[in-house]
Image (cartoon, rainbow, N blue to C red; front, side, top):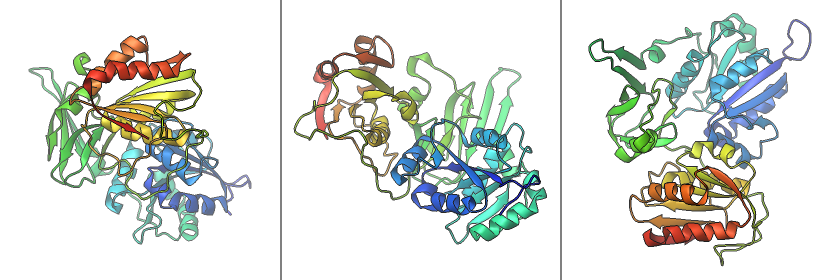
Length: 403
């Protein structure tokens, strides 16, 4: 057993990243092994990771109540733990290691407690590695973890590896005042979608990819092709909102690559497919999720019904809401980027496919006309609201899908 200097049981912080390490069973096994030698506090960040936790039935041991990035989880656990582990399963060991380094570099005070990465523990190439100098100084932690998890310890690396330092280039032109940011993406395979802050903005055709922004607006993808409609969504259409490319959440490929068994929705399913407007509470909170699928858990809190706008948003949000037992009315136009390998939709939901280019237009219109310009409303008649949405969409509807 790990024993700190005060003789009490060791407190271990465990930050779990991504659905793959949960779907594979690695998260549960690591938690159980660490629990044999200390008191483990496990947290998770990321929307699809939350879904994986629910599917695995691990929500009682892994905290999914927060909406935090791994670096924020680590900083919080530094305050309550003797040491912290980052558990990850990258596409490859190399990309997993780069991810760990990127997380470590983003810590404001990286040396408060030892930080150790557990990378792909079920893989034959799985490793343990120090992510800060503090972990290297506490060699007994690494040695004990190596014995418990059956993983070799990689030689310590500097906190800021050259790979991370060289992944972002920032340049300000003295003549024009333009700020150009070039950000390289690691672990990319040709043919993958490129997501920035949850929105698909392009597709790769190379394993060497970098994104360029000028004054907060993406202008080029080297090694890939831009999806213009995705950039419109990212920059909020005519509002033209800039982004901070250096700090943005960027991912390539599927949001959830692994095989899994989806959880049955927890709200009682008292209806079948014979009716679009099935028997449910006829009053309650209705929310609209408009190209913000990564925030579905938070947006849909205490909701009885959700409208999802966009093809990928409907796939991702609908999949998440199926676990929570919340039906949807999806508004799509066939512009799907296939960011998820599989999806579940809660029975009693309906998805409308509109003429191309109209999902965003209808989304804005129903938000203004039916929800008073807000993202949610408590309605006395959800049935009537759904009828009003369909009536609004009727001239544009090409197909209707019932679940």
